[in-house]
Amino acid sequence: MPMSDFSKYTDYKTVLSVNALIWCNGKILMLKRADTKKVDPGLYAGIGGKVEPHESFYDALIREIEEETGITKFESIRPYSITQHPYPPTDSEWVNIYFIVKIAKQVEVKPTEDGTFHWINPKEIDSLPTPTDIKEYIKILSKNPNAFIFGFFDHSEEGKLTEKIIKVL
Image (cartoon, rainbow, N blue to C red; front, side, top):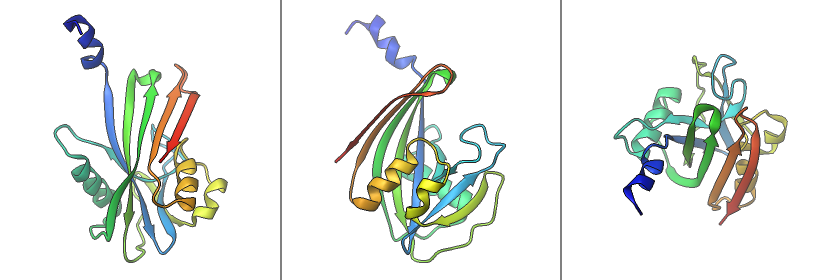
């Protein structure tokens, strides 16, 4: 490949993020994002955020969980999805690594500037407003807890979903 073609990859803005579904006793800890948030205001989402420069996915996951919830003890952690979100309005592509995190005891998490925290029964997920992927992923994981999911969600310049591809292994 000529070097001139290589710049289309090195000039492309990619945002890396981690997201956890924290499970305990059959329920999932979810964040109802504050209405003031830029991304997904008012939606129920997992716990997570952006990976800092030179930070590992694991360290970012642990940092985000601790910062947002105060939870520091985990029974298990496993990845369950890699998802791409090309997002033309921001001239970037988000690459999200999703994890299932199990803890031994449900904890009450106090509201923060990010929003309020709720323990949700997976059967309730259809009645909640969520980001594009989370609702579908929880349904898949409820049927097959060992599933691994590849997701691709493309958006228009206006931010509307234009393409959705989900592959389950």
